Image (cartoon, rainbow, N blue to C red; front, side):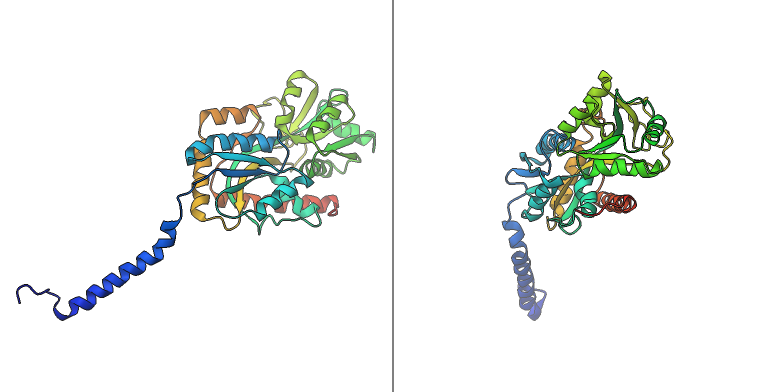
Length: 334
């Protein structure tokens, strides 16, 4: 009797129950245990624009510094065309396995839904937010041949010569930044000139064929330094450290004007939440590196960071705001 289990007659069923529970837990856990640790192979970041633009440069900078943090190479895959829609479509159709991310920006996430009639992707349904990387001011620029050295002078010139001045767009976002300015300035009569590439736009702006652009700052800083282009205002609520002497639009008298571009990482919807969290943490860690901060600042951009939830709120607010601009400007989807 002394060698009997204190549990007596109930000990065997109890042991069977415990063993059964353990086996059940093992069976439930086995699929997860069978999966290789992430990342087990190189990661792809689709950039839905041509190489060399602000989105591409910032996406590459982030990839360069995130890769050693997560322990896998990150390959940039440029898929330009159709105002970013081709690259976004490729991202939407990618497997949500944590090996494809998309470098997103206002045009593809917040503007295209309002101006493209048959968009081959859905910004809300097809993607989840991962991390904001940087915010980028737009800057209102004129060539040195335009006789205006302030926003007020440009508005007066446009009113004095209705229809004679033109403005450029390199995409839907840069069109809406001007449309917002025209509306808030009282409805300026100007002619739109559309470009497919920012490089061609810049060439014509420098030559004086184009009279106004409100586009992302990084592409014009060298021209400002040389005096070839004149920055009249930045579009953010505070001045840019890259152009500390240039007023904001609101300081220049355009009440209510606020706009900024941004670059972020998104992922195909269905990407596992733990992978999203790990990539988000890696981006935030990279953005704390002094060399990353210095590079972004040299481009006129500001490190962003934050949670996926905060990014999701920001993108939704951007989408609603640019939808309002589209309605005010009377722009019909094409």
